Amino acid sequence: MPFDSPLTANPAPARGEEILLEVTGLSSSYGPVRAIHQADLHIYAGELVAIVGGNGAGKTTLLHTLSGLHPVSSGHIQFAGQNITRWPPHRIVAAGICQVLEGRQVFAPLSVEDNLRLGAYRQHRDLAWVRQETEHVYTLFPILAERRQQLAGTLSGGQQQMLAIGRALLGRPRLLLLDEPSMGLAPLLVEEIFQVIVELNGRGVTILLVEQNARAALAIARRGYILETGRIAKTAPAAELLADDDVRRAYLGY
Image (cartoon, rainbow, N blue to C red; front, top):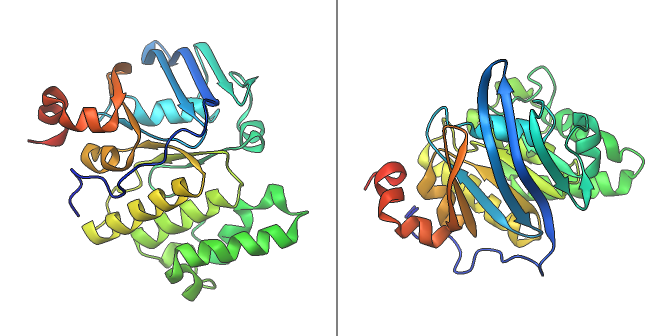
């Protein structure tokens, strides 16, 4: 797939001017080591935004801080008009932020279907919605429908990534955080995963995509942020970042 050209002619635009997520002066540390430094970023409802950077840049830490898995040292996180800076993870999920963790992290001893049901645990009172959305996941990923009774731990890496995304969708996300969805996958599977990301965004799911494969991420995103050693070094429309000589040399390999 030619990742230096967009998968869609017009990546999903911001829907109106509603800022869904606004991060101001965010810092996060591991003991005395500062991992995120005074980060500012925002995401409009309906956008697909990419964060790219090298190993150790702080991309995963940033997502973990947004979803409450890692504590905020300073700064503010505003989501859908609410200050969620120090909310616990379960409350952040309930507000509509769902994360697909790096490395898939499926429940290996459970079946595909049981993994999806766990994703829908907050929606258990709306069984009709759960059934409908489970079938939607199976439509997005037909291989999961074929293997719905198979143990998740016996799936291939690509199938586990599909399952992890499907499980997050059953959490009814207003904002979907994706952490390195292409990691360890063969090129054809990467293409399939990124096509699904484009489709989900086209259906109105707001997505924050963290990805070391900068070319692939920026090819489908509307805007991008460059993260360097925990700091936001640059932000611009994704097409501008793809054409930026410094970005190309540092992250795109040409």
